[in-house]
Image (cartoon, rainbow over all chains, first blue to last red; front, side, top):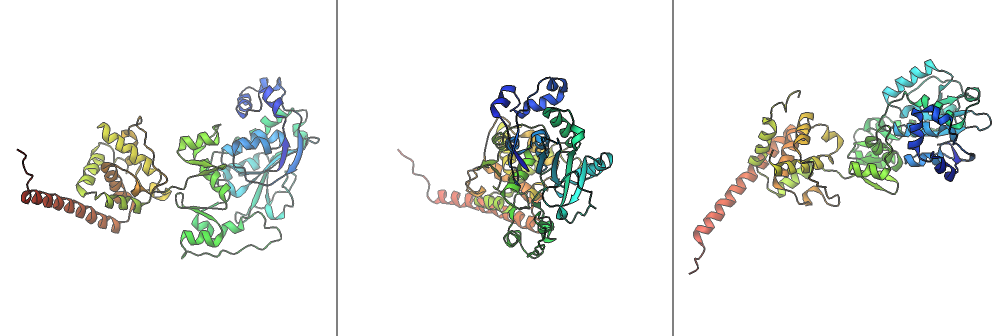
Length: 320
Length: 114
């Protein structure tokens, strides 16, 4: 996420806009929001690149008018790596990684690019110095390398709009994208062997691409060690780091318009949440089940009893 | 469905959630639906994540249902044949143990107290 903006929390609370639920509700009633100015003094503090690992933290890092859009992206399982709002010029833009989009969302994005070329652009990450902007020229899409999507409004498009109107307007750019599983820094075994994890690294500028030190002959554990990735047996996936893994797990359980806290999600899903990360590493393997049945000397007649019970029920096997 | 059996399906469903994704996806939807429809939703049972499955206190019926699912849908055909033999052997062994115990009680009948 890009610029970190300082919000006046007390004023936010007083006006009821510290709570993202309230802001979301107001999307349904735009007249009300126009009569209730609430976005307050804003100050750009610093710039930072980080993986957001908590929906509740978006408010602390999203840049003013892009807040709602960034929250929507988070809920949809899409990583936002930069948000920018120029208070004086009113340029507002958000950057996401093209390759972190699902195939369905890539198609939607390409459609949006055609319909509103001034609001959606795609740039080869390797030619961008600093953050991408909607003023950059479109690059030719090459799925083998990191591509940045920038979406937003140029100054004149947000003229005479309050911050809350801008929030709603930018959020409209996100709405067509669908909920997906989080994919930034998440790789299949095939991805890793084809070196996608190195090719997609966003620090490639002026650097040589690292080679993959693993092959099809390696076990998942060996690949994990060779490539410095985290392997999850449960999901059969490789992760760039704990943050990506946490976002991936969260995206499996958080729905759209889902304002549950991280703790609530973890409890409902029966998974662990510790030190700001979702953990879900407990695995029961086929071998565990066999070991258990060996220990209990499970006999074939008892197994057959349940087999008959399950298969006897009418329609159970319909559609197999 | 018998209420005790419904509890076993609750336990089975809870355990299946911890299968690796690739194994979980091998279980046919209608089998999962059967378990979901027949589990006891008022009964809560949680897996102890500090222990491996075989270290947990589990009901024999729960293990039998899991063994059926594992043998039928998760393991390879070769492993399935091996497991069939293994579970038949368990059956045979249990039967023999029963016989041994009954022989033992024939030889050493319990003394009747006067």
